[in-house]
Image (cartoon, rainbow, N blue to C red; front, side, top):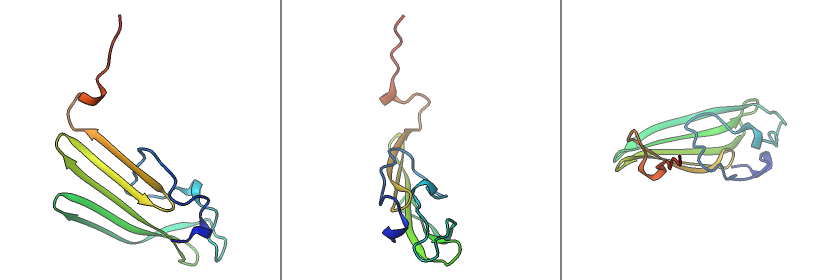
Amino acid sequence: MCEKCLKEEYPNRDRMCLDSGAYMANLKSCCLCQSNQVSVLNKIVSEDSGIEVIMYEHVCGTCQHVISIHNYKFWIEGDYQEYEMDCALCGIAEDSISILPDDPRKASFDFF
């Protein structure tokens, strides 16, 4: 990870978990060549014990300098889909979404 290329290391992205792409708003520029282009290299998709793991490198599209390593996880836990993201460029985030039609944690209260 290269902190010189980033505006902020590991920004809090709340529930925004990305399995692809890059958070370009957090990129200053490549500290070696000043390019603003980012590419993905060495993408690995694996599954272990029901957990899908995606890992790849964010690199400068011009000089291939490694800017950050992106880690993403997805799994089912009970009635919920769980997501996690950890990346110096894209940030850290977690999310949990019900697989049921109506999420019991988000019951709506209608007042008439």
